[in-house]
Image (cartoon, rainbow, N blue to C red; front, top):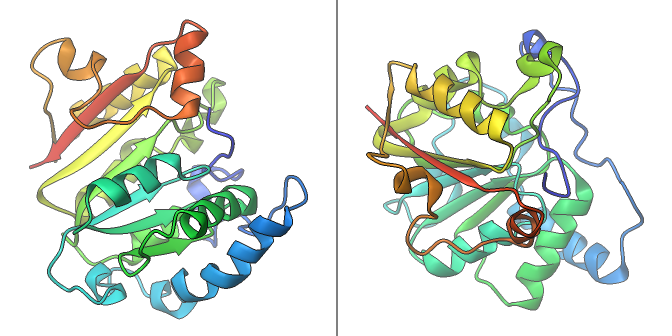
Length: 245
């Protein structure tokens, strides 16, 4: 999977408690460039804790200067390669990126700084994305990206998967009618799981009408290094796009 995981090491039924994902968890020492980017950008881009303490009360547009543009959330963005691409591609869209691990967040912010990407349409959350999901108002997001999440292969760990009936209920609540849920994986069993879970949910409709609708990358898609590495190893990415009814 991506170089960082976004899912919590606790069981899904502990959702009522504060999630046990520690955003400051450090996998390896930060380079000076990463530390500089983290110190420079994180204080101004992070969503303040008090803003997501009350369930279903946070209006995502209130986090941005532009109150009219679409807002997309990427859950577990790893090193942020995809997020940087869509920031460049969709210059009038507001983006919220959630990544609990400091190595991923620092890599992303370093690249944002070095590429001089505008940050007025960017907010980040260095903790469990479900904290934000629970805080967002009903029907307040235009789209959600969940790209190459942790597969949690063992059956007893399936309740930790970021796509499951309980979390799909949450995503359905915060997505606008017509909003998109975009999921990818190169793990066949997980792709099938995510597809079946979303297809069986009453609030979502699968947009694919034939094999190319999930086997081929969407128009404008930029493959990440992780995706290319998987393809070189003989793994094939699935692109699952669902629409909120």
